[in-house]
Image (cartoon, rainbow, N blue to C red; front, side, top):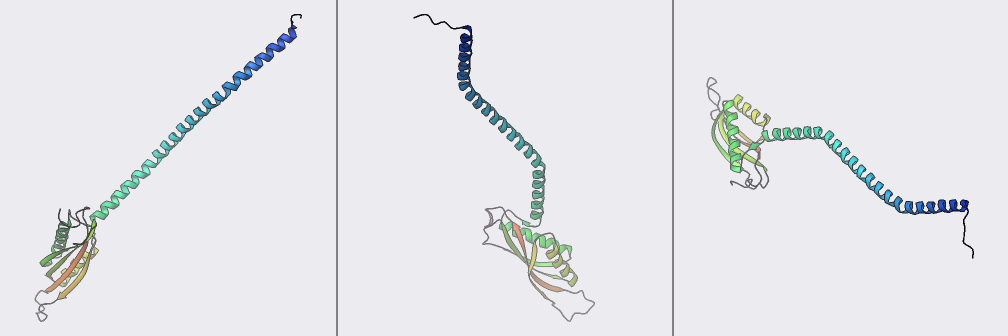
Length: 199
């Protein structure tokens, strides 16, 4: 058998075919690896872009959130200033008695007695305390006291009121004197856990 000889044209064809086959095999292994690497880089880039977008949105929301927090604090401060304050129920009752005493003094009303009536069954931090007051005043002083209690900044209400004139036959030149008894009730803010009494 004679040796196989290839013409230059056949050699070129064989070389090109072998190179093409080698290139296809290389691409067949390299292309999936490249796609995986490219996909991982793309996912990382999208994650970075999402984080950047979240950070930008957070920065935009920071100012409105601060304003909202300020408004909440202002509302809470306004609410707290309208409530009777005390570390426990007895202190809240004493604070209410002090408020009534100050209002009576402003209206030139003479108080004879005060009795604190705390809400002893309350289990929450917002509870009712009441003070029974008896005193002597003229009509203008008593009216002013009632107006200050009901129309002031604090959450107070007159729950009971009785008025008597001790001497109906007194001369007109003598100063008017009305005896009164009233029960004033207010909302008190007491820290949680102290609503049941002294701690």
